[in-house]
Image (cartoon, rainbow, N blue to C red):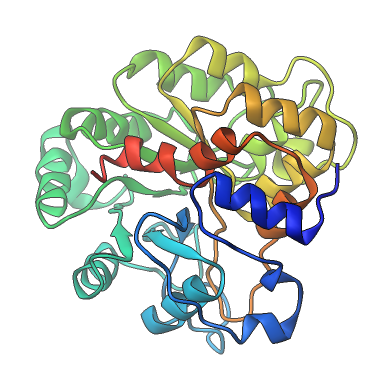
Length: 318
């Protein structure tokens, strides 16, 4: 059901997210930079700083913060990109840590290392590396976006190290990075092997799997058809309590908007393990998540969990 701007604002207020009006609808509204009070805004599980593919569109820390203010995002997770398949311009853990050190009340750093790097030759060396970053403030590992099968032995080493250090891992799945098959059997192998590691799903392959009956090609894309029964996400979430979903990027928004009736019920059903995210990574980028949540009707407590409470609990922010 479509909500009016007044109704949408009311639902946000009831969820403890402040009085957010229809400011997202127009360019004029984007010029406003409202003051965000602690405990009232979104917590965005997925952002980046630096350059992704276009050197003319570098996103500075200040640029990210300005965008956050425009869209009532109180805090953002800053994800490095450290694998050659993940981006044209690598984004380092050190940059994420430095940004969070400069703005500790707004930015939450994650850490990342490509599992093929020479120093990461053993679980012990990975644990030592990750622990140093955690000691500097890293709250998780990711974005884990690597050109290997999801359960390749090198990838499994990373999962083992994250489990030992005690941080969640945010992963990307498609037909190029974190490669899997319809039904996400490789992901399930990792979930089963590392039950104490919280996995956070993201990417076309993950979100396409909200539906059953996928082909391998569809696993790497953005299916637009109605959701079919037998989706791997629901199945895996029902059996593995260490599995979460990051509702960012076009893939996350598409998974819900392609079938709003199913998507709404899915969000309610999985309300304790779905995390608001945008994948904001370049100045002027269109972010469909805000429009999406104007289209769907959710109980206030469900919105609050998805918008911020689940992230606070998972990342131990209090």
